[in-house]
Length: 152
Image 1 (tube, helix red, strand yellow):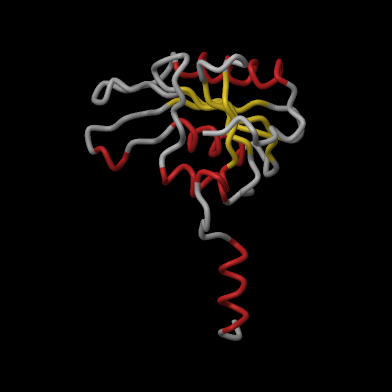
Image 2 (spheres, helix red, strand yellow):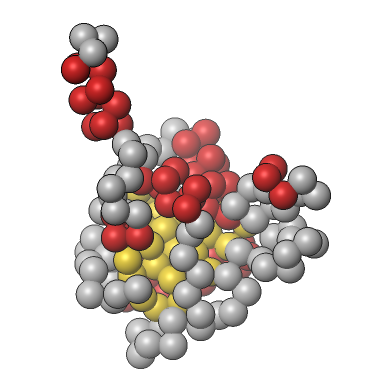
């Protein structure tokens, strides 16, 4: 993970506050199987923060990740543009990057979306973009190309 990526103008205090919101959301995680609690805090362009925590299920494939819970809450409330997302796992100073499925879902809203993760770095966090975490993601532009080529 690289802290060299810009956090889209998000100042360090705001990045740490968003990470703190993710840590607070993590407290509500339902993780009786993995015992790997995750929290996420998604900052919308209009300033609202949508949080999420992982919600596990005995049928593991039905588990909802914290990031997708936050995205679902945001979209269901009308938000479509996002400034950044903070994600934290069980340890406060260890980066917990989104899983592949969450990376794909987040990429739907832009490959430049900064992902803020805890770190032992001097700043207390590192930032990576979704595009950096998931290069070559399948997205809306690829669908449009395919449809155009097929005359759809």
